[in-house]
Length: 278
Ligand SMILES: C[S@@+](CC[C@H](N)C(=O)[O-])C[C@H]1O[C@@H](n2cnc3c(N)ncnc32)[C@H](O)[C@@H]1O
Image: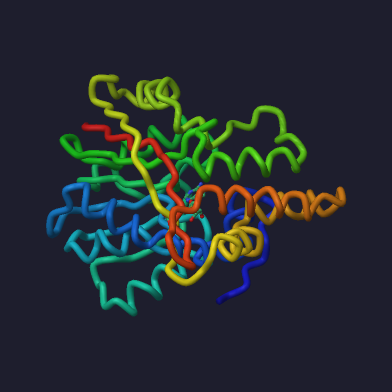
């Protein structure tokens, strides 16, 4: 994979280009397909996947016949996505670099469906993100978001909680991505983008991190080695001599939440599924 120089100018980009998110995405393919199957994709539908990563959702959506554009801030993931699309022979799927807070170059009313599964929630300036998603989606079209939920007892929220206990507090004014999992924030953000709350539905749903051969300890090691936010937590913990304690807590969490009956991993995580009808 290409090595990109880390961008001090854009810490959001540097965070997601760190490590190799494709190694985490490998645990997400099953639920990516389930989401694609559940959102009413029809052939030739024009779909934008924001914060698409290497295509966990975009690839199965394209397999269902939609014309898909994946936009992601991480150049290594754009490259990995385009390789996956080529390997799958999907000429109706392309990935490009872009920022969900500012989709410059994307024409108004271009897409029937704007999708973002744990993607746009990580972009800074959430009000701009909502405005951009509304702008590029056709009237009569839909926006579907999957967002993690703060203070939830399931895996992702708990990883965050554990990690934050080992890291310095974020800079003043930082808006947590997890606020995208809170109903009042969702309504306020789309409200400022001109969408009434009667057009927004929010339901809790379950995502699974799954691997038939990798056990929960190996799953946690993948986070520590390849997932930018966890890599930062590990580095901070190690600086304070607490690396082993962080590792122990993360492994305990994964073991406690694992539902697999054999050697592998099957860890559920609750998320907020947001559907906006324009
Ligand atoms: C947790 S990953 C999810 C990736 C993918 N949707 C999936 O389900 O596998 C978050 C993704 O959001 C992307 N991202 C973060 N900030 C972004 C921004 N400002 N604009 C576009 N993408 C962004 C990251 O690069 C990363 O690919």
